[in-house]
Amino acid sequence: MAHHDPQMSAHDCGDCPIRHRAVCARCETDELLRLEQMKYYRSYQAGQTVIWSGDRMDFVASVVSGIATLTQTMEDGRRQMVGLLLPSDFVGRPGRQVAAYDVTATTDLVMCCFRKKPFEEMMSSTPHIAQRLLEMTLDELDAAREWMLLLGRKTAREKIASLLAIIARRDASLKLRSAKGKLAFDLPLTREEMADYLGLTLETVSRQISALKKDGVIELEGKRHIQVPNFDLLLEETGDDSDGGFLV
Amino acid sequence: MAHHDPQMSAHDCGDCPIRHRAVCARCETDELLRLEQMKYYRSYQAGQTVIWSGDRMDFVASVVSGIATLTQTMEDGRRQMVGLLLPSDFVGRPGRQVAAYDVTATTDLVMCCFRKKPFEEMMSSTPHIAQRLLEMTLDELDAAREWMLLLGRKTAREKIASLLAIIARRDASLKLRSAKGKLAFDLPLTREEMADYLGLTLETVSRQISALKKDGVIELEGKRHIQVPNFDLLLEETGDDSDGGFLV
DNA sequence: CGGAGAGTTGACTAGGCTCAATGTCCGTGG
DNA sequence: CCACGGACATTGAGCCTAGTCAACTCTCCG
Image (cartoon, each protein chain N blue to C red):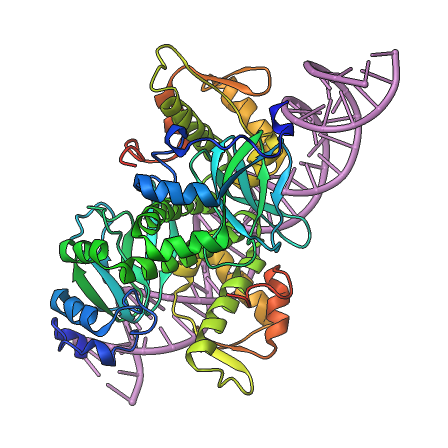
């Protein structure tokens, strides 16, 4: 498979699939050239750990393709996922020496990494990167706060419905609204990963998915493929206001 | 009382108590002068609502003194606090028209407000504000993610202990480590507000506080004043690693 | 003294967790 | 080709933590 090549052929930033959404979105041509000099690609297989919390981290990166997760773990093993990283999302914090969370590839993953030192220098000299990073960080903060409401106040059923709605929505936006008939997508997470994201146990996740299936809100094909006959019905199960989330 | 004066006497930024921590921390003298032209103070009484979620918001602001909260409310009334705003914290999002959360003063509150339009213009022309705001936003994101772990995975007792530890730590840092004997502080939140912050009911909050008191972890004097005879004991109840949080 | 708001405590309930057995899918090797 | 093993998932039974509903206390203040 392709990921056995550790050093991907360095693509031209102009052709990059995340060019217009990533941290480099606002950069001019000359700034991109400078970024190209400090960038390198890294690939990970599904399941591989990218960084362990507490590890020294000498780069920051953008997710180019695939999905990664940020998780926190307590001493006794309790785990909470605190972020889901999709293509164009940013990994790492300028000014921080050490990773604050475990970063794991849940699918095969390609990241565009920048050596931290030159990246930080560039950040302070050209405003375009910092501006875009601020915007992205504010979006992440909003997402984290929405997740706080889910974790603190939603029922198990509402949590599952919310997660499915988020994945469905994201999938639909990638497919450019080609969802004519039923909305359908693959779950990028195992039941256990969903549990870690939602603050539940994997058994409860499984039970609630079965319940939503029994009630006709979703249809399952295999364990991972989900069809949504009526998206509004799913939205009603999330507990959110009927109009919520469309402004973002 | 002083807060009946709606327009506080405009202080000189140089004397401002949050000068070195707020969004203006990095600004030079000339930049401060520019900020002074667009700033005005507003005061709120304890319990007053500063902004309702969904309201048009034509300013951004820094908390000068007092404590405010950010909360989200579901249609059926379930509430989750998603942020606690302390002096120097920033309110509002550049580029957003409308408030995303309810902002409420839990104590008497003074805010230093900037008209949004000129503030945004200044942000794009001078990098110091955006730099500082990025730093503050990244800190808030970390705090939100720590809170996600609490909401998703901690027990009621651990949640209470964590909140008390956070308040105690903040209080100690304000008092400049004058905590010779016992650590002691006042709770700035009612039981219900604590419940909304921790994803619990107020009854559970009350019970767990009583339990911590019975077990000698804390001592109560009245309803709001708390003494901590042994801070390490309290930390053990939080569920966090023994060394956690000191790097921040 | 009465009333309102905040807090405490008790009795009971229920939603989600734990532990355990069973089921499904898929790749590997005999 | 099929049997086996392992990873992932489902389902059941029982328990326990935190929620619900309700009574009561405390304190402040008019």
